[in-house]
Length: 245
Image (cartoon, rainbow, N blue to C red; front, side):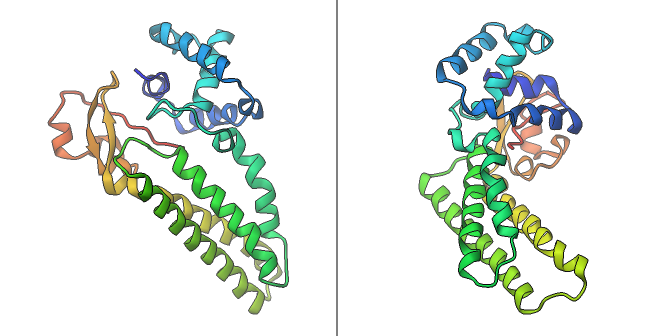
């Protein structure tokens, strides 16, 4: 079984535990790990598959999991490109977000930061999303282009409205750009991964065996409410799927 899939199935982390796990994945040192070290870490996890999950106190095992989870996609076992690894998210987006929120007086000064931010966000969401559903390369390109164009438009249009019709309330005037950015970013995530609920994503049993493809799982609905044909295909009472980033 793919080690990263084995980890998420076995750990069954709560939201808080998953959040804490994410803080480790955001470690900037994950961007400079050599392929050789990643391969050695993965080999260690593969040869110690049964015991490694419950041996996180062992520094060597813990470091191996950190390297694997932060650099390899669980659906296809491929290396995540360095600029789109979880650890690259903050270093790349922080300057773009700052420039997007800076008050400007003309459209030209607004376009580049917004376009850069939503282009990077779209690529990040597509690359780190679930990769188990059927899709052709051109579909991802067309989807990405559409998401970039639409979210950049909504972001710019909202800011232009605020410039033309400034709010009198100081608090609202100062916080509106942040609220707009957060909402359009959420729309970007949903649109970037819109093919997941349309096509359905892989659903597995506790051994990592693929039972079928579920559209409900693609919408991140609780596993107990999957399609009837998937539930009838197995006697397992608990099924799993990759939630993506």
